[in-house]
Length: 111
Image (tube, rainbow, N blue to C red; front, top):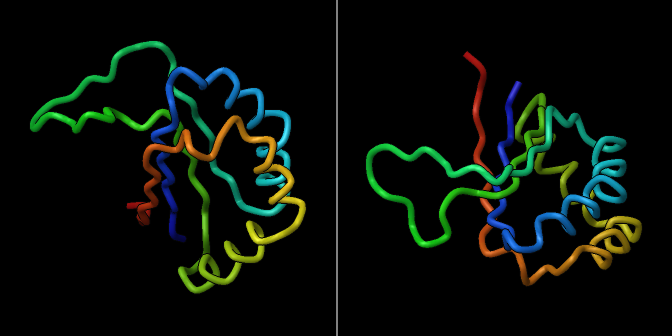
């Protein structure tokens, strides 16, 4: 299995609106179409950072993880799931695409 860890640096001042949108619209769709391990939004508690300092964006504000059998499956399915008219309609209700300051996806295997 491969785990896709998605981090979003979404505008912190809009997290309550984002959370409502995610619960009401995005998560039901994502859960229906993907093997979602979990979806997390930061609480109002500072991150603990050791080593080199973070950049000006700080820590990601939204993190979610998807489980995949293979990378080839991921590449095939992601375009299908997020290319539908239904998903485009959900994204139109997002508090603002311009509020994604950075998005990251990394891939990991369980040990």
